[in-house]
Length: 289
Ligand SMILES: C[C@](O)(CO)[C@H](O)COP(=O)(O)OP(=O)(O)OC[C@H]1O[C@@H](n2ccc(N)nc2=O)[C@H](O)[C@@H]1O
Ligand SMILES: Nc1ncnc2c1ncn2[C@@H]1O[C@H](COP(=O)(O)OP(=O)(O)OP(=O)(O)O)[C@@H](O)[C@H]1O
Image (cartoon, rainbow, N blue to C red; front, side):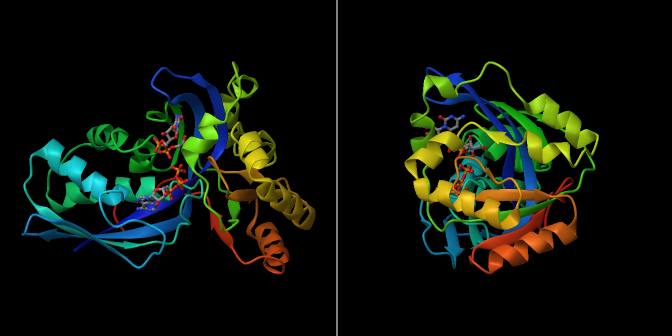
């Protein structure tokens, strides 16, 4: 039995350059792992079956689960004829813009590579990951990176900047495809913001970072789901801090430079809502558990 930890991510910047002929969108974004994780336990099965067990409600356990898809991709690429038992402890909210499913899939790929001693490099695993979803290659490495293309072209950002991240989850699901499809020409940009964010992270400029956070999908999510926009207003009023959206939403987040400030915001928010999580940047995620 082997354990892999699957970290959630937030998008510190997310620019969309345009729609591509294959239906995907050309993006340029800064992805950051945070300390909220699912646990993925893997064990060999000798009957050739891929079996997923999870206590989580609301997610499929058959071929639609990204963990099962990841196992199939791994066995196809490596030619290994085996089965695997996957036990998934879900802590990351589902369909929330936090790449929960993508990170689980990445953890399965990394874990199977260890379980079967196949010694594929992280680069080779990231190539397998791109077959599963746009966010999965980033999740193979974690940490901080600029993601381009449809999300699979990565430039890692080494930095030591530590920030607290308060997540607010509005207890609803948002479909990523629906949000991308509803983008209008005015949402597409010609100038991207990832390099400015990269510099701020590397300079550890904790005052500048929250001001640079921006997400080009936010307008669409807020207009299709006005309750998310209303929640964002409420959070800003209560915390007196800028609130941002991760990925295609609906999860909102606030950044704080110190634990004391994050605690103050957390206590203020917990008085009026339940689904608030205190997390922080993970800059060097350990491989395995
Ligand atoms: C919103 C983000 O989470 C930001 O990190 C990602 O861009 C989405 O990544 P993801 O959930 O892994 O996305 P995928 O599973 O590859 O795609 C889901 C759907 O989102 C849309 N999609 C996704 C990525 C992208 N660059 N352009 C798109 O238009 C497509 O309609 C696709 O059918
Ligand atoms: N292991 C998994 N965990 C969560 N959801 C999964 C998983 N496998 C498949 N799914 C399905 O994938 C969909 C998206 O879930 P997920 O939690 O990955 O979304 P997300 O956090 O918005 O991802 P992203 O930020 O990459 O767009 C859901 O409809 C869910 O049913």
